[in-house]
Length: 485
Ligand SMILES: [Zn+2]
Image (cartoon, rainbow, N blue to C red; front, side, top):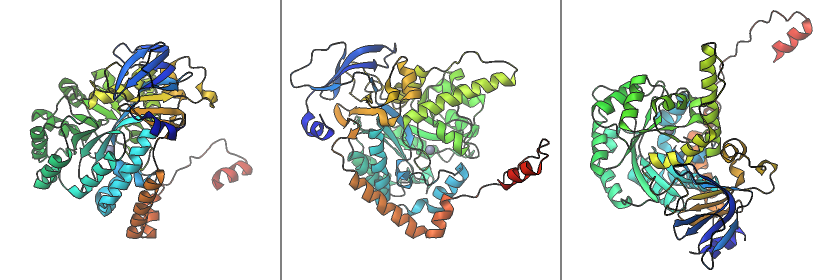
């Protein structure tokens, strides 16, 4: 059955994925071989071998594949996706200068819409069924309406994390316009569009962010905050949040990479989650990807991609870099003591958990999504690619997901019981709409900035590399060749 057929053909019919290796991600991390997952309406109706299914059920052959819960990205600046790859060679400083200080304000509501639309489609395509839109380009509530319009036009699960880098949180969060927006667009209990408030705590001892925290508390919505970011946010912010009663179990700390023991203890004691964006931390310089520390404090972890200005919305990549950074650090810490690390603490099943269940817990959605269990909402991913030599043998399914599989292997995706990708193609999606919208935004940015500024932004200066004198270099030939590079 082709993707187009299925789009029209599913129309409320049950769906069964037959004969896959099922990673349930339940509390016991049960793995079922040659098992089925049955979806009826919005929910998982049964998981097990050779299931009986209702008449008219759509059958999807999952043999040779891995069936797992949809992945969850807990922090992505979706509005920036129209600039995909533009900042590939940036540091965090260059990002701040471009978006916060110089050009972030030229984004119009339609530009936020274009970025969100593309990013939302990218999520579904990559098997990311829930995405937090860390939307800090909302200069006006018209921008916020545009962000929500885009998210609601795509059949994924989203959480709008409302922010605005053009004003202090104590300013935008206390306006009547913001209150009105929340009343108009956010419905408590709507699990397809959740809500958070997104702002950072500078560490100013006057704690001006208090006013925004109070608004969040009055609305009963969680706060997500870039914490422990080298040169930007520090232990002082964590201390202020904790001392004032705003460090809560539903708080999400993004990065949390440059923090001391006292901050990690405060986060651990209050039950908050850290959203680790390993690819981001490795390139930008927020600090070393912190999972090796978080594990020691038993702080819950979720994963995230941060922004497609550098990276893509690909949680396979997040899993792979996160386990690599953690193990790399564990080896280096041992070497520093003259020891050899002979066994890794961090295992691939744990990283798959962070990409699925960990995200669900961070967002307070654990009762609904994050695992394949009867009664949960059906957000399901089938990884299967019969044309790929990398899809067999599947010996260690968690290891296969983390180190072998990639987004192109995502065969089928269901969100809330609806098939949104099938046979490697998005269902009922015309990419032309997104392509045109993003093209118009790129044109707007290029014409507003001018060609020189546009080029300069994309190509930051390269610091000089000092090449060391080489005592072994004694022939003319070697010398000439080395120095000409
Ligand atoms: Zn971020």
